[in-house]
Length: 229
Ligand code: FAD
Ligand code: ZN
Image: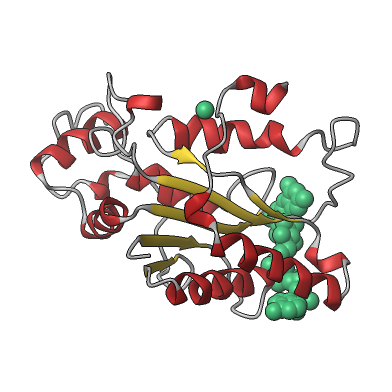
């Protein structure tokens, strides 16, 4: 209630399962009185590539370009390019960021990984000191909501794909926790293409139910045991 939610959404097709999961989140959260901002990355044609163009002013060292060092300086001077600044403004006001995406190669789709590469700039999202529990985005929540091709059984410790938590380590701990986010349990919608319509409707319902009580949830204990036991 009265909370700000940013949904970073990466799917090309509005009629996809990801599209439906995103729409349901908007419905439920809006009913609670939350204000919602959506970054629909494919519709925005969001640029995923981290390049020199991300700095609009003069470079500190044009002889030897260092993306991290240059974007940190540019952030401080306020000369990052417009699309990054816009996304950072959305992040700043968000209490909760939901990342909604289909799993691509055990990770985020490139367009979403690019959003992370370019938006979570040093000095804005983290610093040294200022990472993990003291990360600059602490007091915000992050939630990964994604769909897979593989089934839940395949993503088990003894399954061919290994425990789903192994791949959550880089995404939740290496990125979100690193930047200070408290991480809510992931919402994993397994194999929507391979289950029937009935099951898919149920998956959407489960997500809606969860969101109704999302503000009462406690973050996960984001340390190695959660991922690797
Ligand atoms: P869709 O095909 O868009 O949706 C599934 C079905 O849901 C459709 O029939 C749709 O009509 C239906 N649907 C939509 N809305 C509703 C609704 N409201 N009610 C009922 N039904 C509805 N998978 C892995 O497991 N591991 C990987 O490493 C991996 N890597 C990949 C890499 C690439 C490059 C690609 C393209 C895919 C990869 N996949 C992988 C598979 C991918 O994760 C799945 O294809 C994807 O998650 C499926 O989600 P979707 O939203 O695209 O499904
Ligand atoms: Zn962690």
